[in-house]
Image 1 (cartoon, rainbow over the protein chains, first blue to last red):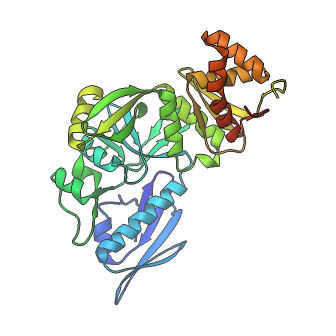
Image 2 (tube, one colour; image 1 turned 90 degrees about the vertical axis):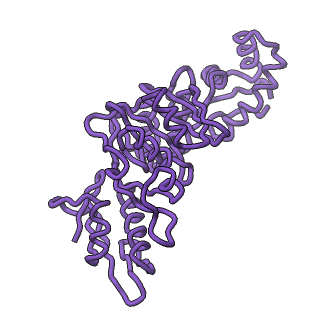
Image 3 (cartoon, one colour; image 1 turned 135 degrees about the horizontal axis):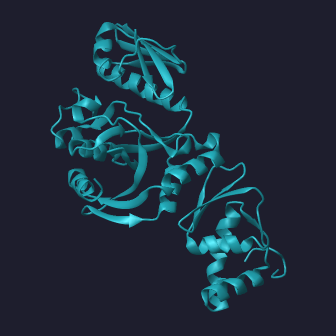
Length: 255
Length: 91
């Protein structure tokens, strides 16, 4: 049995021993606290069955089982989050948070990983979580890093046949601690070179809300919370070609 | 048509950042971001003007030919109407 606490959820995982060894470095175990989410993995003759409250998923091997478990954990943790959660990569320096709102495939994890290599501290590769008053809560889960990025950053490759590898934050950099406040919102677009220029804060707030996982629960309250957080931040538009080059630019300009 | 009043929808939450507004209609999920000019249009709509009065007010504020204002205003009002934020005559 493995039990881990992320944001407002405590996830209890019933795992075969081999999977437990693979997942324990990615899901910091906690000894106590009542679970809010449970999932189970069973080993069978043709692979694994991953069972959670939504159903059963058959996967062929350990690597696929790890991916499925992490995907479910992330989904359930975000569903159980009581605060406004925005799809974003998030790093910090000296408590000042840089958030990169983007949907999946937008390159935010790649940029976050590059920033961690340049000395920024990890907050999340998945969600900017805004508490009442606009304080940022860390969601320092594992990073799901694509093979290209692993290679570009000199990290170990994914398992055979996989496109991504789940990486413990400690493998890439330090995790942010202490109070965190939103200082920068970065709107990223692809381009032929890395260029950083100021952007409007109202547009940045609108983009954060567009990328929100859960503002539909309390639209007016969420708008107020995001607006309050952005009011104390600067907004930027970053054109990215190479994430390592972009990270160096950000570190020089905003770090 | 120009005598009919344009009215803002009731219960619209407004948040202003740097002179630009984020609008959210009660019961809606999608937020509308207005740039500085569109935010001025929204504020002017608070007086429930006729379209002619709105054009005249904006033309005076921006010192622009009313014909130009009327042309620029049409898509802005269409956008607000699309989001259910304003009612009144189409332009």
